[in-house]
Amino acid sequence: MHGSVVHRKLTFGPFELSIGERLLRRDGRVLPLGDRALDILTYLAERPGEVIAKQELIDHVWSGVTVEEGSLRVHVAAIRKALGDGQFGNRYIANIKGRGYSLVSTVVPPLGGTESRNAKFSPQGRLPVRPIMMIGRETVVAEVSEKLRNERFVTLLGPGGIGKTTIALAVGRAAAEEFGGEVHFVDLESLTEPRHVAGAVATSLGLALTSKDPGRELVDLVGSRKLLIILDNCEHVIETVALLAEQLYQESEHVYLLTTSRELLKVGGEHCWRVLALDFPLDDSEQTADSVLRYPAVQLLARRVAARAGSFILTDEEAPFVAEMCRKLDGIPLAIELAAGQVAALGLKSTLARLEPLELAHRSAVVRHQTLKATLDWSYNLLSDVERIVLRRISPFVDQFSLEGARYVVGELGIGNGEIFDAITGLVEKSLIATRIYEMQAPYRLLDTTRAYAFEKLEEHAEVDVVLRRYGEYVAGYLESQRVALLECEETDKSSRVLQTARHLPL
Image (spheres, rainbow, N blue to C red):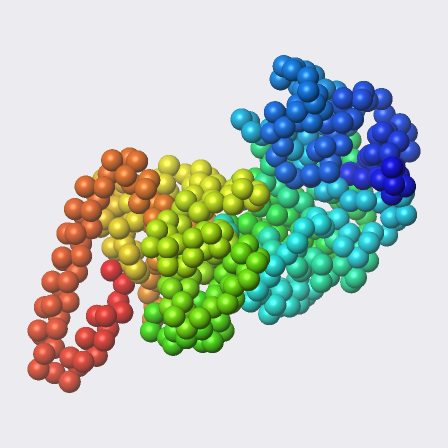
């Protein structure tokens, strides 16, 4: 066996796993662990963050032997005991219900085969080693880096699949040298208990918590170290993350925080950076190959298709189809990457003709990104009951809509005005409704993919008929009010301005 394999070692938290020696150490001390348990731990450590199916683990560890799932559970329990998993919030092995197990810790090879807790890390520090294809985000990365340098605490805000994690990793890599390699990435997705947040952060820093006040202990252990901590996927444990982030920011002046979330943490020191979709060609823009390839959304699609198909040359004939596809996918990077697989297999025209964004799939992505539906499920499941009701009932609005329009369509269906307004606010804060202030108004809009998902929920709850009736009544009333206004202004110099205004006012 090659020497590099024999002596290969992986570290996570305060542990060192020597694959060649088949030993697990903590602070230089060998921990007792059986052969089967070591095989399981090694398999998980070589694919950190991935959820490994139980049957896959069984097939790997007990190749050619029929064993019950209970045997796997016994050895996983032994691993957890050796790691002290769950003690003081330190988490290493997660059991993802109905799916399998995952090592929820950043794994890195130690420098020179060994690494002390105080050693400097490589320029990529504790960042996961994963390929990044980033198009159209260079300016964003530079600006976020500068904002982080000045403010110390920045949250990348946006809906699922918009590219927050990709940007965060790029910022981390760009800042690695400035932080002496002390850049630590903490993926919170697999956490099911908020009380494990501090332990997950500590594990990424190579620390182990031992007190009943993990936030205080973490601050003390960090001390005066200059660190960049990237907290990824905060929304499902947001209250706990918010408290810990605020404590780290306020009590550790050399700790810099970059968080990604679908809603703000809303704590002192936090500065928001809203991540927008990639620019795509509008339907009234020039539709030649050269013109559409100026847009980052088209560039990403072309690059992804080429990667899947071996090559891809966009022609003038195909350019309008690409432009339309990127519009239908709202310029969302995840949606574009998922669609690229179908384009590579079926071609542009066939894919566009049968394009169902919510069903696009990618097996190798993390679960919440394997389909757009899974991404939206993740957000939908975090909503309150009233927010879910309002989201599905505003799905008939194809373009912009007003607060009054939403109130009319959702109202008289068992929800009061105050609850509707609060729910709209919550959906905006959670990046499910887009809005902007325009001439003292705040027109709202659902992304097409979000609207399609919300309408599916409307169908699931058998509310289509009653909601569409309310929507039709509102549109009819709105159009009648505009007709009366136009008639009143017909003989004035203002008539043309009213016509133009009527075209752009949200429903």
